[in-house]
Length: 207
Image 1 (cartoon, rainbow, N blue to C red):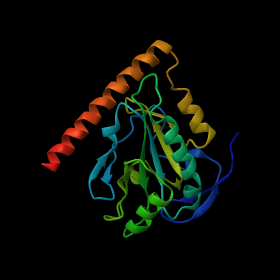
Image 2: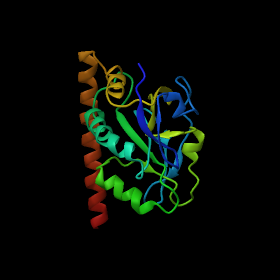
Image 3: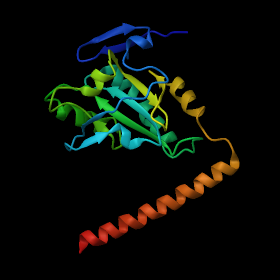
Image 4: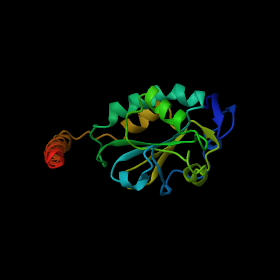
């Protein structure tokens, strides 16, 4: 059953829509997700493809979009629920956030990230150039909207929110106890190695 929701027309205003397809026209389930390469708040280029191997939620939003801001608490809760969860065919869960804030809107964008506690590192926008290549490539019509991408980079869902997003992620979880134990062991080993490298880097910087 389709539900009516208040959405923000990309780059413009809010409206009422009922069709998920009208929010995002550039990709469909089964497509390889097009690359996104845009600047983060520090000016560094982040690439969607760098997260290959994880389940990724490519999330389109903006600081000025009230429905987006209302959706952010659930997006954040979803990240913290699933980021270290064991998936059947993926390393973990990540969110790659694309802001549709307008050129010159860096302060509003970064303030919204802080206010909504969107505490993952993958945030990009076109607040400097004004040309949002990701929104154009994915043909974003209304926000909030998103694309769920599997570990191989293929689209497995679009415009998933609330319980629909949770159900989609739950369907991808690993259920074999032996495989879960093996992956947990590997994750613990990886974390230990990362901590070792971080300590080494810190000592090197101190010297």
